[in-house]
Amino acid sequence: MSNSKNKALPKEQREELFSILKARFERNQNRHKGIEWADVQKRLEAKAEKLWSLNEMESSGGEPDVIGHDKKTSEYIFYDCSPESPKGRRSICYDREALESRKAHKPENSVMDMAAAMGIELLTEEQYRDLQQLGNFDMKTSSWVQTPADVRKLGGALFCDRRYGKVFVYHNGADSYYGARGFRGALRV
Image (cartoon, rainbow, N blue to C red):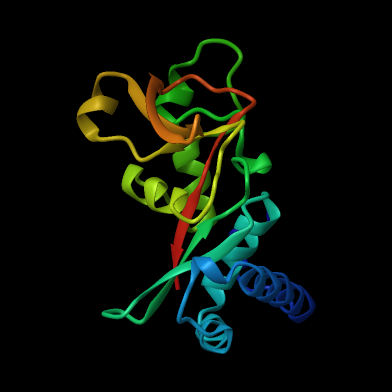
């Protein structure tokens, strides 16, 4: 991932990202009915720091795409739409507390730290279920989701996947990590 201190993408990288996002947008019209790419790009051009975050999502395997438009705020909503949990965001525990509690075999990072560094939000369970209405995601992997404070206080964290045509929510120790579990993010632009 890029240096978070410099959140402006060079022109060539910006153009390449726009090309990738536009092609994905056009291939997946079912995710954003009634939204025009020109409007999305105009908004992105005015929000350089958001474009940087989208690049972080893309470079870590998230395949971000527009999944909605908030008419109250005029923001476009992007979710990670990769078929499986993003490869560049797997094998990490839930948060800093969980990471620090591990005595041995510590993962390199935590979900919450990584999402914050990328400038994105971890999907909630509700957002994850909404995403699953747009396609079949995490058929072989799983993704951490925002965990309620009462569950986290007891040492747990939640994750979801799709199996047997249904979305499942599970729990695990927040300090656990697996090669097939990552996280999906949301970004409002």
